[in-house]
Length: 307
Image 1: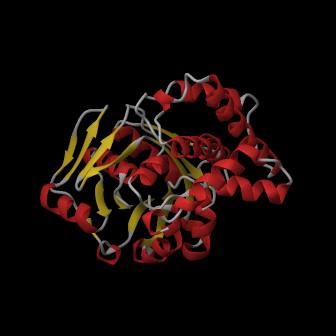
Image 2 (image 1 turned 90 degrees about the vertical axis):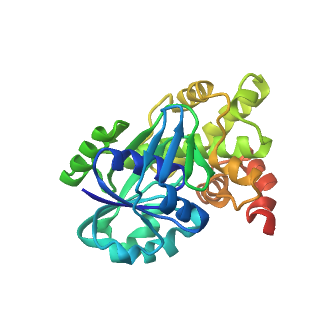
């Protein structure tokens, strides 16, 4: 199976390396020092699941040099969705499927006008991993899961084929018949966790034992849940309680990727996380006071040091 990974950071690097180790023909699209290190020394994944080294590593900064592929694992930052979507058009053959794994809830909607609805699936990545240094991705903890499916719902032969690859690669995977529900379930968790760990600049181990902080987490989860329900998304009862429980089980050192980006002085995905919760809340008439504050206090850092 021929795979192109667009964005070889924590998510794309870890999942792409696992697929390459399982025998898939994987090419990573990256840039800068990370690309050069991958070309020179291969791609190394380290952390809780042990070490994987892909060497030699197929890596390029020119998607057009790859040709059509079976699947595109689309892992760019949220502000690059449209630009990267246009750049990967040479990868799209008659049967190519693109699986966006961004943090927000609308990447598939943004890609469809560029690539065509028949080529766009939807996906959810659950992993904590970042680029530790050029050519090296470091994972925190051991959990590593992909959930993916067709935007319109139901199961498909291409989804079954991709599931088989994920299973061979050794990480947890689900071919979902209701991927938009899965996407929103991640959004409830991630929008809140990103805002809270970024605003405090602290990992979960420093936050979850404080009852005032956990009450704030719970209130923020409930706001996103209410927004999703108002938008007509099917969400399970008890979702908020499950989010609180999940947060209690995260590794002590874990922080959301937006917090890592903020601490490094980089651009952050705030407009598509707490900012999206606030915008949808206003549109749908749902109060979002916690996310209003998270959005406001983090807004000056949206563009990183350049702000």
